[in-house]
Length: 232
Image 1 (tube, rainbow, N blue to C red):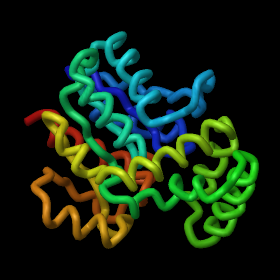
Image 2 (cartoon, one colour; image 1 turned 180 degrees about the horizontal axis):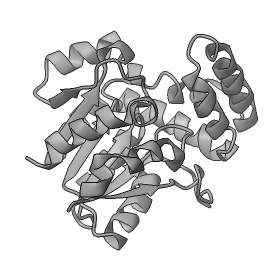
Image 3 (tube, rainbow, N blue to C red; image 1 turned 90 degrees about the vertical axis):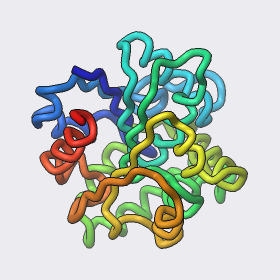
Image 4 (spheres, rainbow, N blue to C red; image 1 turned 180 degrees about the vertical axis):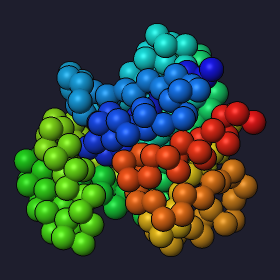
């Protein structure tokens, strides 16, 4: 049995993994959903950055002797940074669930940097999500979780994700992890990231027909694919 930390993406929390807890992967392996500070857990006193959140992930990984992280969206960067902190982490494997490969993947988080205050970004972001619900009802659950996030943490994390993606290629950071996997539905991924994936030797697993939140709308599919990776 493998101990696996599950980390939600931008603005979300562990509720996105609730359906996965009732699948085969949860009966064969130990899943530890982890609320990041500001996103289901009390926010950090200091600035909410990718690296600061990675430190909190490493503390949790040590507590639960976990060497695998299932990380959604921008949390893939956080998980990669945690795994690469070789002085303090037991993490050996990062399974990126449609995590950031290029700057184009920060289509939600990266927009935070366009606003001068947390409140301005929060108001605009919720309005943007409201406009998407009619075409993609699954967004409604996500919007409800974003409304529970700490407004300052949301803005700071999004701004830092933009900065990080301008200075680095997130996919290359992921590939530095000893064992990195990428799970995705091509329909959900920006063309720039699909092009990057085709030109790099990153182990990838398809999740055809799943939405961006596969653990919510396709938990059994995600479970089967996870077991294919974990039980090899």
